[in-house]
Structures are given as structure tokens and as C-alpha cells.
Length: 135
Length: 135
Length: 135
Length: 135
Image (cartoon, rainbow over all chains, first blue to last red; front, side, top):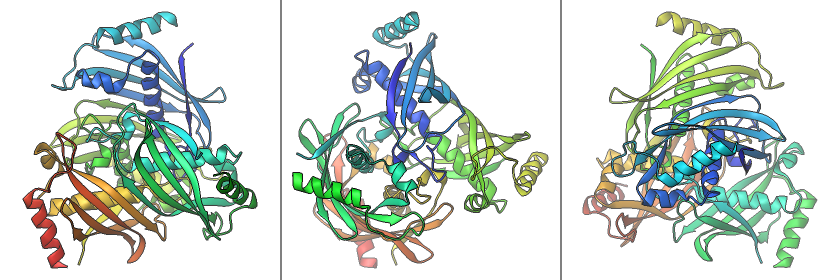
């Protein structure tokens, strides 16, 4: 079972088409990744104070259906792959079990000092590894 | 007791200053107003299908302290005044009981057809009135 | 030569990392697609009044370098492919000739009435075709 | 004559009402304040490297009319008052000479090190003073 996080659609998320502005699903997905880590006792603020910053290296997203104002969405978070210096998330946005869009997001860890890629902290790596095993 | 709604701070809410971008508190406050109505069984989407749109007529906001990444904020919603064609909300953003900023937001009801001000639906007016009485 | 559009980075575009929030590059790219059409005398507002809405079907984006506050960016727009019911854009964000990120964005045309895919208006199709020929 | 800066309305700026999301006018106004300073050879990025951060202390905004997709707006910037530790801007958003909304924005200067208010750099103070004299 992938990690799931609920997101409500507000007016700020919509555009003139009357639906969620497509770029905003990517924000919803990031919220879910953040909550996935928080569920494992990892806070972004603390990570940054320790000198680590998570940066999106690449993403791809397929849009199938649209979310509307007031919709209660579910965002899933699955760790797909752990590479030497990056981790690949697979995520979906669902409304009442229907997949609205799905994405692959590759995240690297960079040093806040140098802004260059560094290894994920051991604790984070373990969380990712456990998550893959659990699936 | 005013209505309260919890909002978590994500990276999307921050700016280069490392704190919440000041404009975004106004989005948080709108989320809280929306949830205040939802708590009274009113959905924005439905209102719009019935031809009603709530539009902010004026707002003022005082900023005292900043919210940071990962902060769990509380947004309050109080109905301050009901006028013939508008309602005045007083709202605050709090972090651990400390008021970060507070705002006065006047909202009018307009017709989606004409985009001109009309009276609030009776059901909504009653919700506002009950809320004032309850305080 | 691809179409180019200049975008300035403001505080609203940055995040706690001190750089442009990665999701916002996708907004910059949409601005450039809009200006590409405007340069060919096509206004979005008019298109929508005529019943056409352009919707992003899929996108992928690779991030190489970050933009900073005050940076003057250049966004390119190239038509890569015209399919029966969609068009594929290839776009880059540059700062002083350096590519910060590049994306492939597939856009479909939907009817505002049915929200289902329809053919692009002939005028738009011609603009896309001419643009490919010109490259 | 107040300083004027042009802003184009894109899809990202709109909401389900088909008009510009009211919060976004405040972003447009900040862009104009930034450009007002840039017109006087002041770059935000540089200011921050020198340890200065401009922070909005309070704002009020009156909304009269709405902007629509594709609208070319003009944002004005007038210095209304220079206080010991803050400056008060009066700004309007116009479309074809018509005022859509107007705001009063008080900005303080804080130290990036302490995040506490400090005096504006002398150069900035002079720019503000000259601007008032010029009106």
C-alpha cells in the first residue's frame, strides 16, 4: 500500500477553465512527499538546518482527468527506485479511486553550502529502502 | 470561540527570505473561510452552480511575525459584521498561540450571470447571523 | 530560430532554497507559449469565447541549473510535432545562453462545452505547421 | 507622474471565476515596486547580499473591477510617506485607464542576519525622497 495524503481543492488552485490549474498538481505531490517524510519523523526545516536540501532533478506527468473545486483528492507516494545520488518517486492524484494524473519525480540531495549533489543522509536512505521493501 | 482551521506550511509557500511569502497568508485565510462554510454544509462549487460567487471587496492585513517551513498554523474565522450586501470577516494566523498576522476581509456576493452584487442566499445569511450570535 | 520570450524572476517565484521554485518554470513556459500564439495574433481569451480550451496532456522537465532572484530569463518555444489531436512543444529556460531546464509539453484542444478533445481550429493548425516549416 | 509597470494576465493568474484571483494583484504590485527600484539601479538580489530584506508590514487593498485573461495591466507606484523605519507605497492596477484596484503597502527594512527592523540604506532612502519630491 503506497503512502496516501489528502488534499482539498480551493479557489487558489483553480484557473479560468474551472478546474485545477495543471501545474498545481505538482505542488500537491510535493506536499505528499513532505508528509511521507514527516510520517517517518523527518522535517524539511530540520534537514535544511543540517545542510541538506532536496531538489527535483526531473519530472514527468500525465494528465487524464481534472479535479474540481471542493474535491477531496488523495495523493499517493511510492518509492520506485533508489539510485546512488537520487531517489525516484512514482505518484498519483486520485479522486474517488479514479486516477486524475500520475507522475514520476526524481529527487536529488544537495548541500545547502555548495548546492552540489551529496549522498542522502543515512536515516533518509533507510526510510526509502524500508518503503521499497514494504511494497 | 472563533472557527479554527489548521494549515501546514510547505515549500511552495515560502520565498527567498526563508519564510512564508506574505501574500500566501491571504490564501490560508481564504481556505479557512471556505472550511468555515463547509463546516456549515455549504460547498463553494454548489454555490457557483446556483449562480452565486463570493468576491473579496476589500482587505487589510497586518504582519507581525513570520511563519516558517513545516509550521502548523491555525487560521481563525470570525464574522465581524453583516451588511446589506456584504459580510466582514476578522481573521488571524496563529502559530503556537502567537498571532503572526491578522486581517479584515470584506466579501460580497455577486451573480455569476451578471457579475453584479446580489444578496447572499438566505441559508448563508443565517449561517453568518448564527455565528455572530454564538460569539 | 525558436520563438523567445523574456521573463524576469521576482520574489513570488522563489522559495526557501533562495532559487526559483521548480514548479514555476512550467508557468514561465506557459507564458511563452501564450506569447508565441499572441505573436501570431491569437488571444487565449478569444479562443475560449469561441469554445476552445488548450489543455496540457503531458509534460516532462529536466532541471540542470537554477534561476535566481532578478535573473532575466529567456524561454524558447519550438513546435516539435503536430499530431491529429495534439501538438508537442519543446521548450527551454535560459539564462545568459545557459540552459537551466528544458521540457516537452503536449497540448490538446478541448471543447469548453464538452471538455472533450476536438481538432485545433484551422488557423491555429496553420500557425503550428508554418512554425515547423520555418525551423 | 507615478512610476508605471506593465503586467500581462496569464492563465496562471486566473481562477474559477474566469478573472484574476484577487490575491494575485498583490503580486503584480510587488513586481512593480521591484521594477521601480530597478529603474533606480537597485537590485533585490544585491540588497539581500548586503544584508537587507524588504518586508511588508501591512497592506490594504480595495477591489473595484476585475482583470481578465490576456489583459495588459498597468501598475503604478507612488511613495506616499517616508517614516523612520518604513516607507508607505500607494499603488493602483489599471486597465485602459480604469482603476481595477488600489492598495496601500507599508514596507520595512529588516536585517537578514537578525530579521529585525533596521534603517533603509542611505541610497534607498534617497531614491524614496527624490520620488516624493518629483511628484
